Length: 134
Image: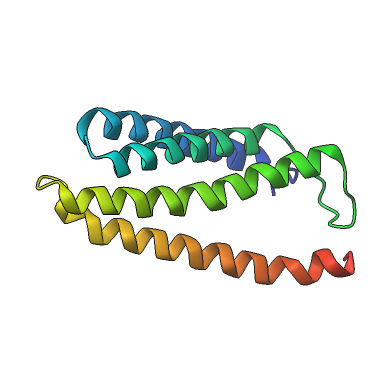
């Protein structure tokens, strides 16, 4: 995607979203004192960092080619796929305990479930291609 014409747009979106996650994590760290939210914000920092790095490390369009850039790119992709849903689950738990944030607990849980479902769909869609080398 980012290697195609106009790929700069995807790269800039990843940088913007990654920076947004970092700023969100910082704000939540200062606003919500629950320990599970602190763990969630650490995971949000990781997800934001991984998104920014995804935009900087380009990969090949051919799924049969495995290079160092491809391995690094996939590692950052896995980092986002794991850190973001876990962050949502930890924060939802903490939000339930904070009266001011309780209203976001269900929404944050739904976001985590949707992220997990998207990750699962991505794995199911890409695995046959990786296995066959197409």
